[in-house]
Structure formats: structure tokens, C-alpha cells
Image 1 (cartoon, rainbow, N blue to C red):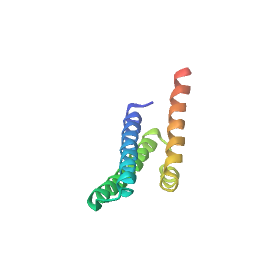
Image 2 (cartoon, rainbow, N blue to C red):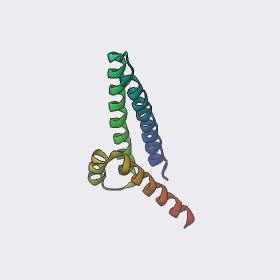
Image 3 (tube, one colour):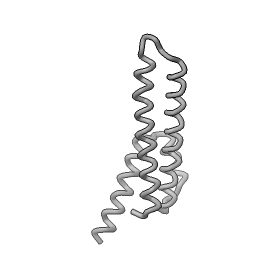
Image 4 (cartoon, rainbow, N blue to C red):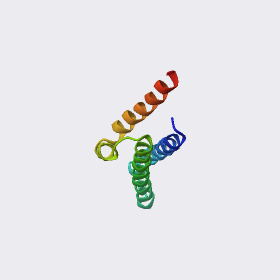
Length: 101
């Protein structure tokens, strides 16, 4: 994998991990009996920001890999988790087939 693509993929994975963590804490905070609205609001903003950053970094990985951006960006927005996994598998497969040859 090209270093620029690898950096974008790593950043996208970190943003995804942050989003999952925010979602985890958001569910816990929202289901508590004494819900703290400030905490829920900040966690929701963190979740939204991490999803947006994840999509941006995945779009950078697509562009740096030489793929067409518009179809992948539309797929990332419509079906983000599935498209992210498919794209990561394709990028990894391209790397392993290039290493074998």
C-alpha cells in the first residue's frame, strides 16, 4: 500500500474507533435514569464529527489510490460501514496481490 493511502486508511480507522466509542458512551448516557443533557449533546457532536472525518479520510484514500471519487463517496454516505469495509478489503487485496507479483 502506498504510504499516502496507508496514512489516510489509518486515520479513517482511528476516526471510526472514536465514533464507536462515542456511540457506546452515548447509548449508556442516554439510557441512564438521570440523563445529563450536556453529556449526551457532546457525545452526539463527537459521534457526528467522527463520522464526517471518517468519510473524509476514506475519500482521501480513494483519491490517493487512483479510484474514482464520486461513486465511492456516494456509497460511503449511503452505506458507510459496509462501504468502508469493502473499500478496506479492496485496498488490502490490491496490496497483497502487488506484493505476490
